[in-house]
Length: 198
Image 1 (cartoon, rainbow, N blue to C red):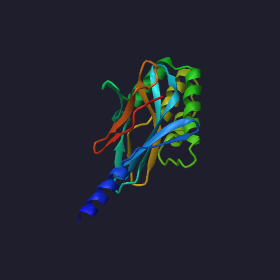
Image 2 (cartoon, rainbow, N blue to C red):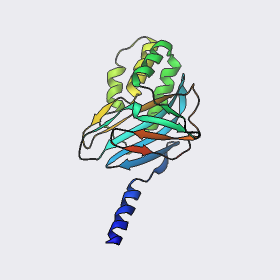
Image 3 (tube, one colour):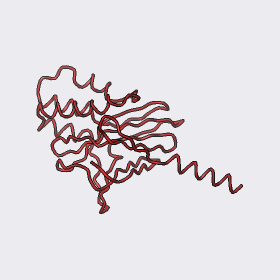
């Protein structure tokens, strides 16, 4: 009986272990809770006041799972935290201040991260949003806003077996995320990653 309980506890703790790996020059962390997997890597570029994190979520649970950018926060070593900005705020900022350089930086950094992952097959992510958002936009600021709209993680309700990906933006005055760790708090789960930051 005790051996069975020990094995069950060992399995549960192993299932919640943060796994770290490198791909295409980025350092990823991934964590699974109750069949839902969250993976992230800080992107090297920043846009205006935002540090950017590329995330992917896969729903391997038997029921639907809702995720939104505001579920993400970066907790500094001193305990203070920054909540991720909503997609609407990021798009609005780039609509007002976006440049051609912002569009190039956003798209090239994100696509480099996404397409560098051979096994990543998003069913509900960037590719679908990119085609819709970048159709025929002429204004540079609108292109920057459209690029952010296509890249940004938006609230998604994932059916079992579905995945999504996107960029999560943290207002950091353009500084990188350092000396802290990422925490994702959904309505049902808390994903707490290892400290560090790029």
